[in-house]
Length: 472
Image (tube, rainbow, N blue to C red):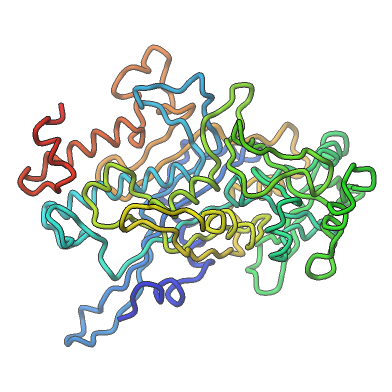
């Protein structure tokens, strides 16, 4: 039987994962919480379970196996709340970016699967571990994380090449790791490109089809007005040092010059090194921790690049569930949808900058997660909606709602806005109904319920203190 790494390498493709997630989004998620047509866009993320299943129709120990792929959690969203709106009670979602919603929804799924394991159900993804009260994942499955867009933060620091209809061209490893030439975040166009959008005629995102990519799937996006086409940013007047200028104008693969970088709204963590802010490709500093931007009210939410890097070291299960697990739950692979992308920047952000992390507890470590990009576009991505709306009036804006979906039997869906269930009024904020099912307090209540279903004499040693001081 093929196990572990071989599952990652041979049993799925990036396009299969993306297509499965897009189909799930279209068929299993409600209209409520999705973007308003031709006016809003959003981001999508999901966790996919990949499992080898023996064909029960055939007898014997050498029964053929088939690979099953199932979406077990999904999230959409683009928003964060400011630090002034955070609550100590844990009943509000601080970060509603799609990647974070998908991970918290995945935790709901893990809670449910541990309930099944505790009840000795054979269809649980967990089997007993070697120590009392601890569980471990079945050896015939793994989890793949999907995001329709490059994670905000360090992974989004990618080059903008001279021929702007191909900003996604792979970057050389030297460029991606050079700390003097950087970009990041939510992939914002540089200022001079923004001015072109604001002052010119209606902007179109031009899609170019590539051999091997299915019909209707756009390639790279370009920014510019309809008449003149893309306008590359100029670096001739920037105050770069000779060394920086040499690096910026160095030739990228395919003979294209790196003329600028995508800008990010994510800000460097206060008190640490910051961006240079210089014009052109030296604007950003790579490898830094960043917080997501807020409109006036600074957020305390780390970028999705930083959070994915953390999950790649500490696992996705969280501190509570770790009490019941023999090993952390790691992602085996990360797949990104069609968007501006750099393989080297992704590897740097998710694994490369964590290589010096040490002194971790037993079982934890930096994982060599597989990273791939799909050629399939998300129907509600920013560039897809922009291309469809053409000359439609009004601004294209991010959707204010976030959708959470978990593969659990009871109330799998959760639609929120501003950190609370959509439709919550100020008067109703303190009610139990005004809590997202993936908020900290509700996940804690779920953990309490899980513990109450397990006999205390079967609790792991790490919870022995709670036996003396029961949860209230």
